[in-house]
Length: 148
Image (tube, rainbow, N blue to C red; front, side, top):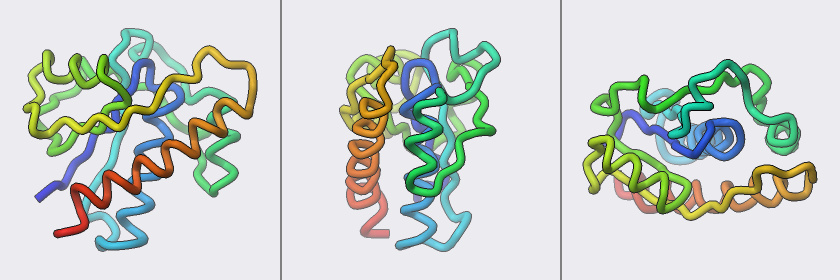
């Protein structure tokens, strides 16, 4: 049974910080009791190890559906014990390959193919990314959690 999920992108500033609470929201509000699965996020680039939060544009996009990313702090996947996670939701081929090379079991790696809007100075780009993430996280729930 999947208990801990790590959503992974490049710098942990846009996509994965939004993916984790969306997936958590879907799980808590639809098919699983609150707290049964815990969703987190991290990035594969060393920039995720530096202090900083989610991008202002992604914070705004998330706020539109009631998710507050204002307190998000970036995390670098290399500082985490990946053995504690049951599923890795990766944004693209590069991130999925990185996780497998880091030692993640290929059977635990899910690639959702959410292209990167960074660097963008346009809110519409991040709003579009947020919409794609909503659909992708719904598909993750359907694929990995629906039968449980």
